[in-house]
Length: 314
Image (cartoon, rainbow, N blue to C red; front, side, top):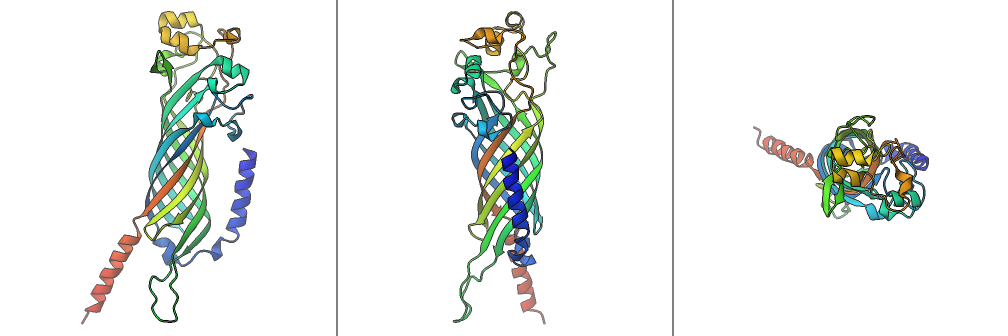
């Protein structure tokens, strides 16, 4: 991730130093204060399961397994309170998944764990607009010597914030997708096992985006968001293998199998052996976004009313 941070910092410093020359008047940015937004795109999970054909790298985008790409969508409200600053409240829903069978790294492939989980995230973020080209053109040729100019509304921005996510990992057993939390696959809640955990986690989303105007009412853009979580159970893999006979007797055959479905090299995955690491999970998503301006219409309506009132004063 150090390369990602370096690129972001370089872009930020270079863009901030020049951005003041690209903004038009106070009136132009204030005509885009309030927007509703929605989007759709792809998700990727960064945790214990799946990955490339090598030993996994925690949190790293270099460990992406494209075959485990999920889909997602979002909706939100954006309020721009300053030429360079905005805040967005958004609801994001997506599918995360990972599968050891998709990697040729021998240990993870032999471990043979898999999962999928719906993720529902509500977050609040702060945006800094590091570059913008915002100009209102004249819609009509007012004279023979005037040239019709189009509108410009493009922005590059960085953001960070806080949020909360709900997750519900499942795995396939006998052609059915079974919820994993009730199965206590690592002995959660049993003697010498870890404590039971909640299906929610705090998150820190951060990323960058670029958007451009389609007209005075609509914008389109693309956003990339990396989400750090404070849970290592989104994929239901965290610590060590628990006694499979105990799980079979006290929970059921689903728990016995899904806790340890290893085939080849099964001796590597006996009770007490490492099942996963204790690094917190992460995920990211890339969305195509659309924005609907709900400020300009109100402004234009009020301006028209004021003009009407002023015309007939006696």
